[in-house]
Image (cartoon, rainbow, N blue to C red; front, top):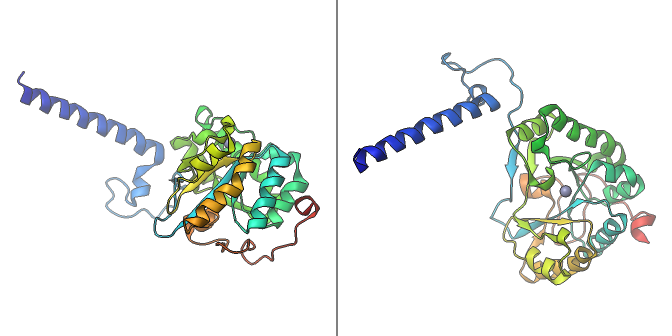
Length: 278
Ligand SMILES: [Zn+2]
């Protein structure tokens, strides 16, 4: 076999693999209806199809100097309070992704976080690795979060989900969309704050964002609480503002900028409740 034929045969093999993988993916996500044409029919289908998989977002538009601060898990009540007090004092919006059991444990706290205008996204009920679960179990994780959190936070619950550990596959994405979460929000900057590095290290990592960056932190280590004012000041010096995930991703939702924290669409910004104000 000459090098040329070997190369042809390899590329043919790659082609077959690509076709196979494509066919499997098409089966998984229903590529016919997604493409708008039923195979062989030559016309757009009139039947209504189930939603396709959720889209995956790592950052927003690069056209504006804004970043989105996000805080995950949020089992530590005191850390949530400290973060929210700093954000309010600085007039900085942020998006929280608590898991369901964390909200169920502190409904009074989360009602206040919501009333203060901070959007709250779905981070599943119990924080499992979703790629290890069957589709029904993944759907349950999103649905159970919604059942617990929405009655507590009302309109602050946003139709954005973040899979624990950032782990997802096509099943995760399809399950999310079917439960009303057409967007999975990942991140661009990972502070790895859960490993408890010094606050200065968290601040340095968090400060490496650019236009449209989504920054991942957690409501947990004290070091994150200590780093937050430094992170905010650093971006402001560089001329950046802060937006929520809905605003970053859709260009809609809460209208938040460098000024005061504003209410979630049409709602007045309530004065802080006794937890946040204290
Ligand atoms: Zn998490």
